[in-house]
Length: 235
Length: 388
Image 1 (cartoon, rainbow over the protein chains, first blue to last red):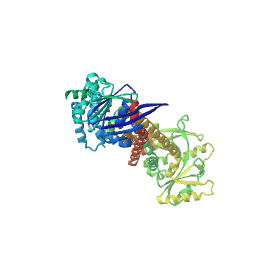
Image 2 (image 1 turned 90 degrees about the vertical axis):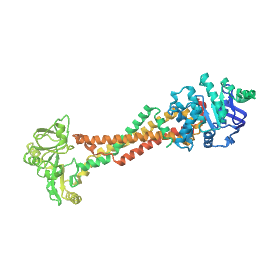
Image 3 (image 1 turned 60 degrees about the vertical axis):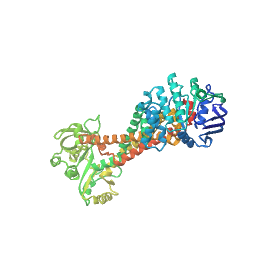
Image 4 (image 1 turned 90 degrees about the horizontal axis):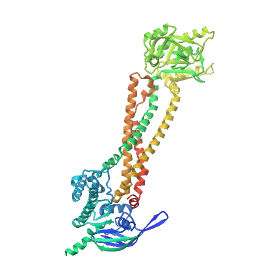
């Protein structure tokens, strides 16, 4: 699903050059649940942005779902994201003036679906995350965990193959964090999605197939997550 | 259209701010609409007070210069002239401290009714005007303003001659906008004679022509007649006369139109500031929209549409406000508000309404363009790094 080869990303911050990624190579197979972990400033969010088509590397190749993102224009990248990637962010980032179902419907505005079809799909996505009964609520009327589930519904409503999440549990209590991680694992297990998350949360390790550890822009190690170990044990 | 609900929701995000911005745009558009009615309103007003068969003749050097009173008889003899009277400015005031509050003239009573037959002055009033040396006919606006009525005796102190005369009001000019005060020239002549200074000049001559087609030839003939005379003359139609008389008002209208343009420009800046604030507050949300696949063009269009929808709706409201205000002015004048004067002729036409809505539309485009462009160009990864 994801092939990253020798990717480097350098930012200019004032007079300083920040080497966010240095010659990182990575392969994530389709249907895997992967966690990018590491301390702040390790480059994990930059790597997520690069593989999701939000940012461009200074060097190296990024191929996602068979598409070489380096070759795409801004508009082509936007189209790629609309069809291939679902996004979940730390602070939920729902549009406050839209109801839950309208937030979920938002990415479908970019498709040619009819209004009724869009609404039906959005309601189905909300049902998947267990929030169909709260579809008319505004974000402020939902708890943090519920808002993050709406964000996940928005990420899957276009049936994107890749779901990326940046600190999806960062603003949640322990119970809600577990629920969200479980939900992301369900996306991988039941719907065959490839899920890549950035997290500081050590609880995430037991839910993922792989943990990729970064520090100072370097990929230090890739190790199996709890889900892989469980699967191996069950065999 | 599928983005319209999204656009409307965003406009309702900060209702007070949207309402205040819309109010500013609506008031500016209402102001522009009312000001745009002024040129046509002035023309309508002049048409309402001026006859197309009445002409004025005055000294070519200017209205403040006199002409021989003998000119009146010569004008009366011009073919097509049905009747003619002289006008002599008296400059009378009821209270010198207040100055001249209404125009007052000495006129020739015999032809007065025939020159102004379209004014529909009561026959009895005209009869009394001829009969009594101290008679006066007064415009309805002045009667109302001074709380005078037919039968009252009033005294005017001239501000240009050393004379104080008392008058008996015998009738009115039944037009709610009429302010003039007319009295017999003979009364003035006798008053002057009493001071030992005879008066043999006049300021102006008003004539009525029997046929609109003969107005231009009559004016030409009158002016030709006095060419190289004691005082050369200029004749003009009543509409042209009042047009020149209100010329300074037209200058003010031009200034007001310029001010209205500047006000509109200010409104563009206010609306642009609102759009910028709105975009700045939503930088994170816009980045999320881009992340989930919204293109630059879509972001730009939806943000621009917010400004355009707000401005256009406010513009329609402003146009309706101007329509209501001008209707109110007209009905107010109809129910005894003569001081409204020319304002009563100001009508917001369909063309003005359409122009106003287009102006509002362009205010929206101008105010929304730069904020929308800035937001659409901003890098999504950089914004996500900065905001989250």
